[in-house]
Length: 609
Image (cartoon, rainbow, N blue to C red; front, side, top):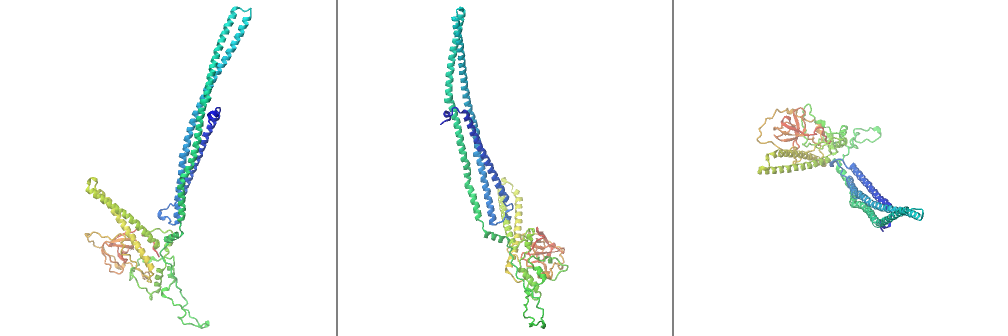
């Protein structure tokens, strides 16, 4: 069934139908465009949502809880899902909407061409009809004129009064009219035959062909719509496997949540390494009371029924204040006194507990060893500044942070070593092949690399010394020794903060400057000797001995030339600096004998109490 034979007379309706078909196609294209905009907006909003809830902190500050990691995994999967929505929008915009708009323009051009051909054929047929109609009217008009001439001739021929010339004139006029009528007849017949032929061609050849082309165009439009409908669905179907993987990733992230692991991470993150405080002893203040006979009670011996107070557990009110959980250790006792005491305090010498002379002092030092130092937590809650040696952190957390820093510095040192080796190889190549480059041009870079290596080694040694100090504290707390003073010797495997180095042997001998009076060496008082904690003073710098010092006086420290020491107390104006050897021995040395380098963030350092 074709439009050319069935709809030969419906040109105007076919014109309207084909226009409706193109309008419908463009309407569907508009629908796809709006769907693309929705997908783009949806994907953009999803990405903004992911960006809003993604962590903005560094990796070191990120929580390691499985619930948080799973949530971040879900955000990543949702970001991938948003990417698939963008793919859907892009594919729809390119393969559906763009194709429909291009096809719509082609349809409009083709339809216009077919309609113009139909109108031209109709115009040509109308022109043939007009020519036939004109010849018909002319033939009719000539026939009427011939009839009038025939009537006039017959009237004059029958009239006896008419002259012969009048009759001959009427006869010739009749002949002319009759001849014109015959010519008009022949012309009309020819025009009629031509019109009939053109009309047959119009309705049997031209119009059917034009309508067939319009039918084919409309059918192709319908097929194209069906293909775009399928493409519309296929675009969505192609991303379904990836979307399914994103959803499976979300489910996997949800299954990865482990409450026990999170609890273990909480313990690892906040474990201080301290031990719980011990029980406070009972203080019996009624042992000196005596009962009288008027109380109607049986008197008991003075020493019976009364709990004897153990000197190890005796405690005073002042000591209570010092032993409170959030109390502070009085470090101010280390400031130089006006007059030197008789005995210096060396924390690396273990002392015998004084049971008989001062049991309260022994009790306080014993309980300080057992109770945790919680002042660091208060400092953390108040936002205490981060120190270079992490002394503001509890021992366990400090050990982890120091170990992490040592690992990071070791990696950087390895990079510098590799760079040095590469530069040396390049220098060897330049020396063997001077045309390739100047070996001396690499020397500044090699020197810089060596300098960086020395700095990194110094930092590693410094952090290792701090780490050994922390490990020594943790082990000493685990031993639970009864003595008030505990040795804190750094392991022999640890090096000094800047490494043990000496100058060249050919260095000229330098005469030491004037030494300060050894009697002015700072000595802590008797009270500090009893109440000093087992924690050594924090290292605030390091120094190199410029000259040898015998350290024969009490409280001084023997040192050799070029020996590297830790600085634990600055010169207070008396010409002496308190230092510590790598083995843990402490004492005072002349400040003028030292080349001192203070560490950053050394002032205001926080120690555990």
